[in-house]
Structure formats: structure tokens, C-alpha cells
Length: 195
Image 1 (cartoon, rainbow, N blue to C red):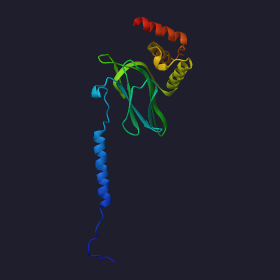
Image 2 (image 1 turned 180 degrees about the vertical axis):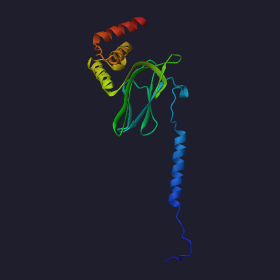
Image 3 (image 1 turned 90 degrees about the vertical axis):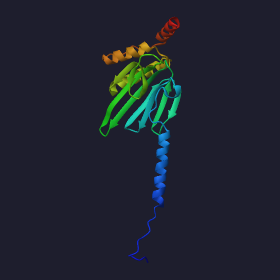
């Protein structure tokens, strides 16, 4: 039995271990860049930051040729796209009461010296071919992308003008024209001529 007048020895070993672990985690976080930049290490890629918090915040690429992928954390990845690449970037967020925002952008990655429009989570930005907000319209764009794939065309190879057309028709509350193999062949011929 211990003497009540004598002070008890407190074991701090667990506390010290926790402090050491936190210090190591902070040092690791300092070495890992959390804000990627498109021009880091001489890169000419357009970078898209994807975040995923189940049923709260979800960003994903619907289509596009990824040139580089970097995992930042368990919930964050960065995808890099070469200049001229076309990709679809979907952003969705919700709270306890349901969806609060949903957006889709079809973007063409830009090269050095090209003009671009800034876009959240896209560095430095891009040539925005389509920008739609609101889940019913976003679902309509996703169905249009599915239709392009059913026509046997990779959506990232489709004519950029088609995505502008889809944007304008959906914004006006009308149905976009389908993207057919014939339209795709015409686009490929036009691209050959323009050179």
C-alpha cells in the first residue's frame, strides 16, 4: 500500500510516444506538397485535384487520358493531362439534407502561352468547352457522354465543338443532337485539313 503523503510517480511513456508520433506525422506532411501546381518541376501538365469524402464531397474524372497520377492523401489524388487533352471533371457535394451542388465541366488542357479560364481544382485552368450545374442537367450530360461511347467514339476524341453544342442546347433547355460516327469522321477530316 502506498503512503498518501508521498507523491505518486506518473508514467508519461505513452504520452511521449504520442508526441513523437505527432512530430513524425507533421514532418511527413511538411515533406508532402498539399497544394499541387501545374508548373511544379517544369511540368506542362494541367493538374486536376480529386477529392473523395464518401457521401459528402466527391470529385471524379468521367473521361480523359490521364498522363500522370499522384496520390496526395487517402482522399486526395492529382491527375495530370497533357496540352490538348479533353477531359470531363465532375464535382458533387452534399450535406445532411441532400445534394447541395453538382457540376460537370468538359475541359481542354492548355499549353504554355495559351489563354485559359480558371476553374476550381484545375491548375492552371483550361479551355472550358462545357459547364453545367444542377443534378438533372448533369445527369443529361452524363447520358450524352454514354451515347457518344455507344456510338463507338471515345469521348475525349470527340470534336470540341460537340461539347460546346451540348452546353448550349442543355442551357437552353433543349435536347442536344447525337454525336454519330459520320460526324466524328467529318471532325477527323477537318482536323487533317487544318493540320
